[in-house]
Image: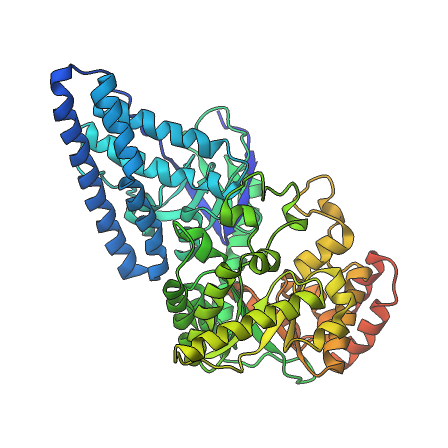
Length: 576
């Protein structure tokens, strides 16, 4: 009897479509263990515990070696953090106490101590801390496997291509899997900033995380579809759904193929006006993809992964190595690196002092940097040190007023003075710009343009703040519309202010990859667009169909409209 189709909604973290059989990872069970021991066996249990830690450490070092040979060295921090958990003196002390004083077996003692730590993390309101649960669980499972008498934890056997469905998957397990047979990943308990999510993106595996609970039992002998774009996991797909996604998969693959073929061709409008196409990247591995698909530089290099991958704040040297690598790869093309855009709760943990009831309107991005000068100065030092290796631009997110910019510029001068005093080479003329993503910045663009070297429009947040809509909220998400006339008027104001003050202006928001929006954007005066690498071909193809002269006339009319449907109707008319 055929099963009814099940659609689970999660968050897509690595794009692509996967269709195939499901491989369900079962939870590891290490319960078969003695709970208590005779006093005479305490020393033996302690030795057993130390040996298990040593074997686990050796295993993690082997995995780290594999990572070093296949990925950017930054990902090594995932396993370095796990090794630090193994070496935690407090854990060792507590386990020894449980064994000696309470006469518990090494397995029972270690499990109890770790479970106490996990309980604290799982109850945290801080998403970042909750997502570190998987690191602790990964280490726990390896140590318990050793204590149960197992050899080094064996690789998960994946004999044929399949979609992996699991509550969680440790980064080490993903590294050890035969990735040629991984069609896609659906991980219920992973988050968008989890280590395994970052790795899946580096490996280009379509991945959905944090899917909602809708399974009454584990799927057996099921086929599935992973939509890494929309965050859908579809089990037991019906024939109509299967055909739809088979077509979507072909379209996606054709888009990637076309991107490679068009990489050497210029991006220009129908009337032969050149438009510069740049790439948005989240991790260093995407730099290669961006170049493959013809990016003329990087319009947005997000640095949040550096702060989410490390066991603590990333060091100056660690950041320098990453920036240096990407700058050298793109040289002489420009690379715009954005300083961290994280909230204080993710950087410092959610305490009573920095817990944000509404993080989008709270202590994040530039506000955290200005209040935490040591953190910001470290990133600035790394950026300026790397500036001699390529064409660097530094971009600050979430700026709302001129006063913030002036404070930032004072910190930049202080860092430059330090580097000169230390006789460290750097480029003192690195352009400093801001993201225009808050309505106050757009409304005061003329004043801000006198203080910075360039603007980059962040239309995702600009739309959210302008319309007072959280696009992740199901009840109001339908109101989120980047083509709303109010948003277009703010974009127009920003571009006009930049032109009057003779500074560069570009866009790095998702709107730049939306074909219908392109006539409005270039018509308003944008000639630099930054999009995800996989969208470069689509944007290039769409631009070739647009007459810029007509787009300019239309854009002026759009900004006088009052209804969003009128805007869309007018834009669709341009393509007829």
